[in-house]
Image (cartoon, rainbow, N blue to C red; front, side, top):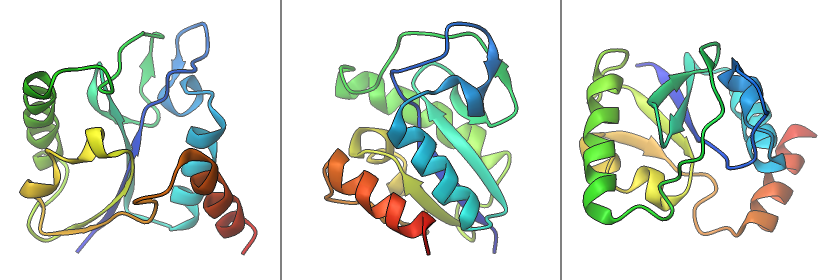
Length: 138
């Protein structure tokens, strides 16, 4: 069983083409990535509103797209794309998925997965940052 961490993208981005890991500039994304790496997972991916499943080292252009304002029907289409991409790199029934992503990024993905964890579930952004910083200091 592999362990895979899924981070959500962020609206604050670098202004030029860069690796996905460096594109997103928010404190929450950076803290989430640091925490994800501390878990020593088999893989880490970004859930991108534009690209779907995104590898950390993939170079991409900045974009302005979010699931937060997307109608549910469009989010389901996005999730189907992500599930297809995810099934190419993971075993949806055997691998464990750790979500460091909001409900709109995970709600249509979870029904396709057997094992998953949501360590930040129910926490506002301030409490998420506090949790992530505390974990980074452990």
